[in-house]
Length: 186
Image 1 (cartoon, rainbow, N blue to C red):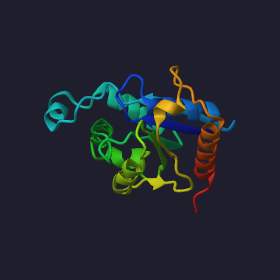
Image 2: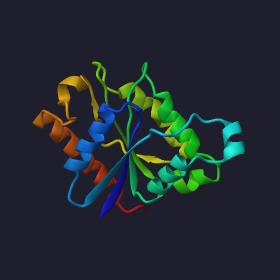
Image 3: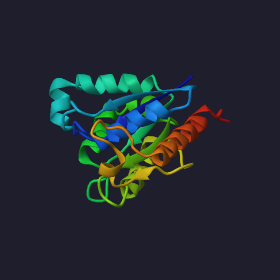
């Protein structure tokens, strides 16, 4: 069984990226378990906060969930052509203390996806993630792209994908990533 952790990079309660991850979990292959988490509850990073109070409990919990996963699926919104600040902030907290970087991220498979209400998809945000993934030593999967646009037309009020064509895109994306994660490393 391949265990993936999907992290939705939005704070919004009705996040389309969270809905995308829930759809991905429902459409995942039978040999895959996709756990979904949102980044709500993680405070803004401050070295002062870290020095005075340590690493927040929400960050420790997320670290444990990452360590339990075989790969990460990051569902990134796109804000002004780049990564949302709260999502980057989450990564900044996860790299504290710096000795945790290797055990959390080194050679960990990662895939990027996203959905936006606008017309452009989330390609710019996904591209902006690449230097960060490289810095963390992760192993990105480039087999498929999933950068959906016009989210309001794709999901109903309950957050369910409406079009079979889009469900098939999501299904193929997750299946491809699962195959990548399952490949033995030489």
